[in-house]
Image 1: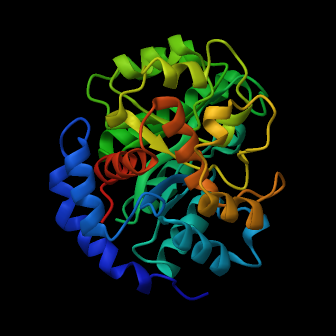
Image 2 (image 1 turned 180 degrees about the vertical axis):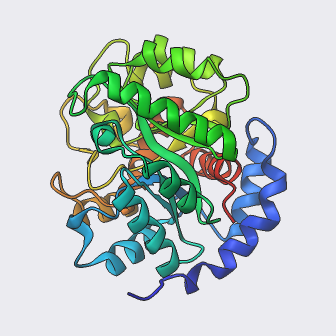
Length: 328
């Protein structure tokens, strides 16, 4: 595999020179327009960071070069590849060597795999985390929805990884399903948590508010299209529960395909989707295999619910990712 990084060199330099201009809680229109000019962007050509993609999944094994090139072409110029076990954490780190400056990784044990934890696991995670390209501890957390690992094992393994993140001062990339209270109970035991990201949030307004009150960041995916609840992600965006400086975006690919043809998707959202973004989604992504190149569509959906310009959502979430994960 060869790196598709060459076309990013100008943008990366511009991003680094502009980063200090994005330290306020939210960029105003004037600042946003100035940054877009410096980055060579326009209203439909974004610079986005996908903070969570499972590119070690076997569905990407045959054409990863093309997947990453499509991501770059769509505006997704940096991708954090999620480690969910010792094996996938090693593989994710390997991908950072193949696509330097474009791909980063995390290292952790997913709650589904908590039962695989051994005496050696902690040392291996530490070794992987010692690499600069590994930017977070995770994906770790609690999942009481499927219980592929016993709850007591999940709790023990999760807390060990929280302790590791605190020791290394690495951001945490967290998974939570039907386990909000227990997750909070563990996290609030620690007074100096590193930056904490609730990955692929699908919870309620009250849960989102609690995470925000604790200073956490929230990652949103294409799940947005199928949320039909009165108290879920759509309502959270419409009510402004997540400040723009706490919002991150991700595909969780090959999962969480954003179905823009869903009948329940409001017309204001459908009309906000650009032809350019839809072309990547419809040409290259399916329910069976979502790709990072679908992320501009999710950004546009989020922007419609927030009544913001999609370009502003893209820029704000990008700089949030740069700050949280320390990306170049």
